[in-house]
Length: 370
Length: 211
Image (tube, rainbow over all chains, first blue to last red; front, side, top):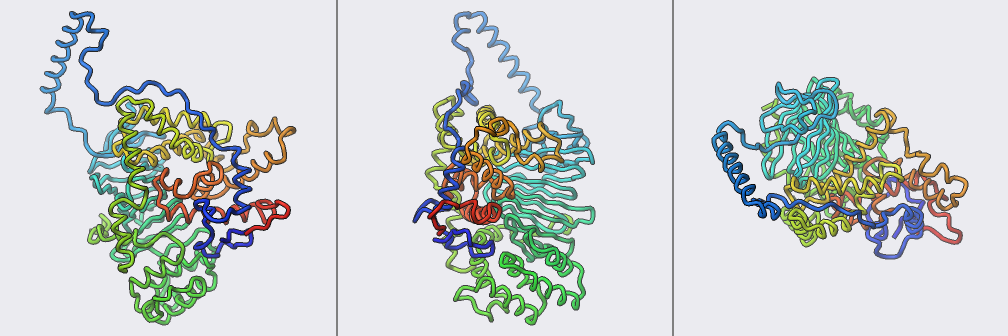
């Protein structure tokens, strides 16, 4: 086990010690000391006195107290019958509760279609097919208990496309949303004009500008980004841009050097073939071990074997491929070999994505481009 | 996909990756019992999740306000329990409530553009007791500040591990995150914490050698 101070950020995660993970194996004195120091802040375990819980969905026609007054009980029964009759008659005009998100106003006056949410009415509902918009002064919060929560920034327009048991899908036309999703991985999808964003158990921020260009920044877990077969996996701490017609660029860790990030952005979206070669050289020379994330994605984005072998060599310096992965296989972009190498980089197992990707095949075209 | 991952995919499809089935079903039973008025069941949920909620709040809120907010989180959850449609998602749902209340705390307390600056330098936490505070307590606050200065992805998980004493599998079970995410963030967070604390701060016990 090695979790010593002399570890550098770029050293592999595998084998870094079981004590930090589950306290198994030989105790690590450094972590034990931190536990001892920080343990003074630990929760004291005392429970508050909780109020009585009113049972949910329980019909109590006549409480015990009322049974002592039969006339009162009879009157209550008449009122109840009248209410039921009214509800039955009014049924045709009362809309059914639709699947959707609860929307609450955080600031300003967000709108669902033409209806403004002032906050006085409490929570509003965003149903399938409806549009939520915030102006430059407005913010809103969406919540669905079985899915997650979305904070909507000013200047945002989003539409609810689907809200099924295994599929929740919205379209972000423009603006910024901050999502925290607790629905099972792969069930929550956001269409943007330039890529499909698939939640894989995470929190992330997604921005779309007026041209349809997007940026996803993952703060917890990871996100899948996909357009027409071009895909990107974005773990916590990383970001990825996307452009209409092009799709996801190459993901990168946000603490990479400025030169690295600038060259990568040009390589993804601006360069001529000659410039791409020059910018690829900058990316490779500036890469750190952690940027294996970027290099792995570049294998499928570079043009021709000449560039691919440069990326292969650089990635191999940082994380040697598994024994079953061959140079020849990588150069011809053998998917199982690429996946095996990905799994060695220390991020989540790519089978998580591959599993959910199958359920999305054929659906990975953003709404605006269909 | 390579065949070696086929079994794993099947497990994922069955929902077994994230949490053991027994624990999910126990939670679901407790949630259902609580909905039906069983306060003891909600109490058991409290004991099961209090450390997680405490840790999530401690990652963002000054120490002196955390205990009050823990109670607020559970009281709010109690009131809204009937709106939770998937009983097995109780942990993730509760964690989201805790994060919301932590964010609301900052919205109420300071203008948004100062959120990064408060750095939990709340005088109440330590100011008046500065003269009598032992060196160890002072060091504990320094380490806590260092953890809370890390990116969101790392600070919550490190606090759950180092402060609340939860193991990685427990963190994954309580928060609804995957083992992989927790493991990666735990190790990366630890690396960043070491970098912040320096070589002598996190392990300066005489005669001890870091593994």
